[in-house]
Image 1: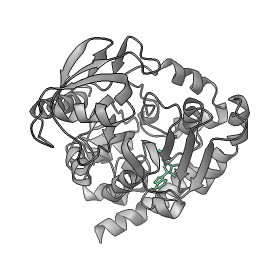
Image 2 (image 1 turned 135 degrees about the horizontal axis):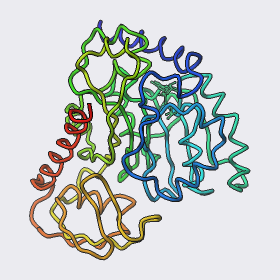
Image 3 (image 1 turned 90 degrees about the vertical axis):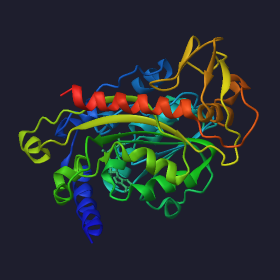
Length: 357
Ligand SMILES: C[S@@+](CC[C@H](N)C(=O)[O-])C[C@H]1O[C@@H](n2cnc3c(N)ncnc32)[C@H](O)[C@@H]1O
């Protein structure tokens, strides 16, 4: 019953919030939409961003950096695409052969984003548009015409925290990704489980604070659905500048985090490996900063845990590495080094939340 009620408050509050209440990102009550990414954008993404129409950028309400590397030719879906800022950056990065779908439930946002499709097609010199915006719910992607196993990358920028049923959203993303595909998303996380009373408050819903996941629950959720362990790419503390909201949220602290998570084939061989990055990912000639704890220098062999080895072997990055498996026995071995890496990643997140207050 509580879950249903939360969904109702969320649905009405959000349509009003993003459809009419917020004119620009300055109207948000936290710095989530303007918190600086804790790593620099690749050069090609910076250049693409400069070419996005200012009216689209003005209504950016995201909370992080959702631009993974090596997108040329990819099919990308943006869950909760808003005014379309990230979609237009992807439009440039996937190139004319690629495809971008922006999905949003709010009419006003769909209309606002669609208005600039032709502008960007012409700006990027494409003979036909590679970007579409569809109205729909991320909880029901098939209803919006999105096919299973059809996408290389699913991204989302500050939207999953607005949704009461995260398991359904993540399962839907899993279904529409091809094997080897990547879920790369930025979201708000809470330092503890958010009290049910927050879910009755339309502003806390609209700002993402009522629906933010307790960060520890992320790993279990992803693993249950079949995804790899989440890899933290970047994170930053979120400042609540409205005193009324500070009072309402009390000792619950918030951070934004960008994670990359993969749909690795279930039967992939998982053993430790020695991997050497070839320097071939665009914008990453010297090194490839895969996440906050994996930094691959060009032509320098490093040992990686079993799950990371499976990711590098089975995704679009497979051609960018020379990979030698270090163990030959056993399928789907659990990976102790990788688990340790994830502990480090989450310690990093605790530090972020606790010490940037
Ligand atoms: C915080 S804004 C982020 C917009 C965009 N990602 C950006 O970075 O500017 C959230 C957007 O998600 C949309 N949204 C929220 N819940 C949704 C759902 N269940 N399905 C589809 N869109 C949703 C809202 O309409 C709104 O446009």
